Image (tube, rainbow, N blue to C red; front, top):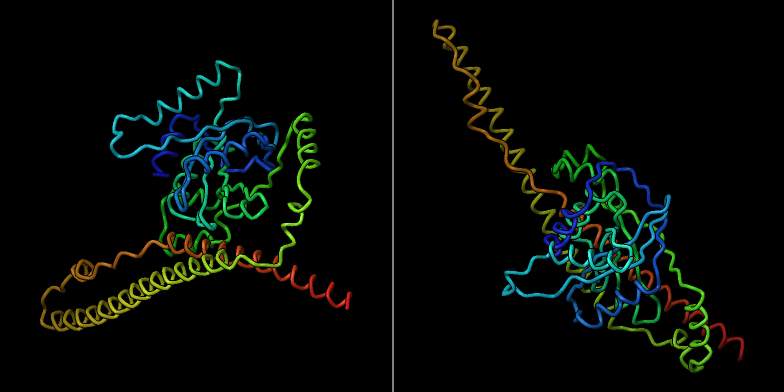
Length: 340
């Protein structure tokens, strides 16, 4: 679903072939953040992913996101629904009311940080290949519900863009390009901008808030469900990585076995040709042996890189979660020792 939606959106955009990233900072309106949060609250349930289009403009090396609209939820029964036509009508309507209507990327929600996938890679490649400055915003509703807004922006690195254009995901191709899981995505810093009136409203709401609500972050009780779910997802991805490693090891064993058999056949053919030459007969061609031993198809290593990147993301989430709770416990221990 993700690849189909973003590919159709990117096909309606202006094509660009430059791979150098011109975006150094993302400035996003507070209203856009609220729309993304509201979209998930209305249509997202559990692990269900919600997606939408980001609109805005580029000012020098800064990408300003000023508006967004969601992708509508529809089932397979809605065969007559045209996604490209829907997006074109939305942008036309926004243009009529003098609102920024230029594509600058897309957004997607995530479930416990599970967003590094082949669908996201293909979708962002389609966007970034068509729109040079495009980004993908990843919104984590679970982290946001714990008291801190989790919104990150990512782009594909120039090396990964070159590999996706060539579609060479073989082990030799990735090794030649020197691409690892840490070189796949680049994070772009985000700055949330509000008008002066909205800032005044936020100050008033903070003054009216209850005192008890301001100390929720000091609660020493750790969310064991969040840590347990993160570790469970981490173990699942480690199992997937182990299976991919087994497949690659099987490929290397088969390739080595075939090379050995081919070498033995070449030796036998050389001995046979030497005997035929001694009898005055013409030698047999060696091309038949090359046709007999076709090399096995190497497995795609892109999925392995994506799994490794997702494992790294889970580890960072667990590290961040545990460091916050350990900091609270050490602080509480110091306060208790000081009072005693």
